[in-house]
Image (cartoon, rainbow, N blue to C red):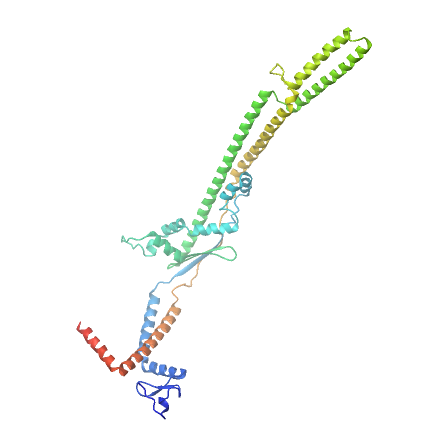
Length: 428
């Protein structure tokens, strides 16, 4: 413990930024003083510092030159717009919006075309095809030649994911990049990835087109069934009510009933005139009355009930509105179904011809190419980093060792304990 001696500046705690060290010499605790002390320690132990730094740097140099070079191959492709068949889309929207949305989800615009391509590139199916083509389990040393080492394919897929990069550029293109120890294999892998992507994407589009055409064929069958059902209903209705040409039949029946009613009114006037001239007992008056009664009975029969002849085309006028409306309703529904059926038949035939023509393909903007400049290892960066890190570590170790030695000198009892522990450890 330091004693405060009156008149001794070194013993005053706040007199100046220096203190008495363990060796009894006053030490400056300012920033400059600390730096000077560190520099002194480093100069005193420069040989082990330089030796450690040199060894680590040389080992790093040896390692970076032993490690194989890694090259990177790139390609730039333009994904399809994903518009699909506009005719199919239009027909699906008219036939059923829900199904159109479901079947058209894969082909719905340039953004969805990009997403579809990225989904294929990141799929397990895509990775397995690339792994099997280039035997990457052997390239990545999961499977050694002549040895039956067990490995998991998921690990190979994960390693391929580390070496393969798929990125959408700001312009909407897709960049495919592969890193490998062999520049030729990296370029071949990129070429094969583009081929597989195009193949899988085209296959998916064919599947989508087949699904759409299957749905449209189903809609065509439904329309044909509905049309046949309406035809049968219309035929049954016509045979039941003898209503074949309602426009002409209604006009004829109404004109006939009107003429009969006018004739009855004329007979009534003739009978009134005959009664005024000759009386009601004349033979002409009686003949006009009989004729009027017959025409009245005929008119009532036309207005209220069917004729006794079931094959007659003359229908009761009272039933004409209901029968005509029912007939026109059935006929209108039939014409709608017939028009729909004809439209579907034309569209289906056109779609079957255009199905393959509307398949989108992937465009290659920049074919696969390999840069002669390796991407790893970064020899200069690694050597510089190893030199700096080893130098810092050795300097820190030198300072800590200096502090430890001073502590041991200032505390002899601790030094004895350490020596005793060392002796016991060597005995063991």
